[in-house]
Image (cartoon, rainbow, N blue to C red; front, side, top):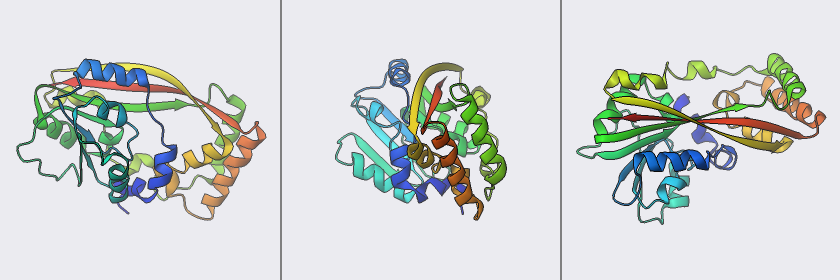
Length: 252
């Protein structure tokens, strides 16, 4: 399996349970990059649109490139009637953009799946002078608000988390802070905060969208998800995440 396409195996579950991002983050991005009518924007690997609508709703000239065929189809289903929406189903690494240029290129976690030298060099070449590369990621902390539950969940991981390949081995090394090594003039980090609350079933479904959880081998996979369910049920059927949403802004 090509691990970059692993999310393409679960488009409906991915669409329903993958996290959306902070409104404050998008407000900050839109202001900082000047996103709006007349601006050409490219989103890398939008998945099923977790980070799409706030940008698309500005009336910008929105473009996206999505590797997964099923994720691409879901994007077309959701946004294909928008006049400012354009998407291609292809690999950013090899896609020929011809003479196209963009004012803003952004990614919600996807860019880390692209080799660092390609990601930064190619986005730099595709941006107009003064353009912005925006990179968004999320860090979900469920230890602080649920310490006893966290400990029980770790016991489940210790016993049954046997993926075919670990997340760190699915992709090469990538450091968001290296943008300035590839020509970008500046890099700024902005953090925003939020909270998610899951029921047991929602949490199990969400965990089923993690790339290295999808490839847990049997008989461990069934035992792993059953163990997670038992752990959350034993703590009231509820789990809280304290989220940090990070926005990196690199300027050409």
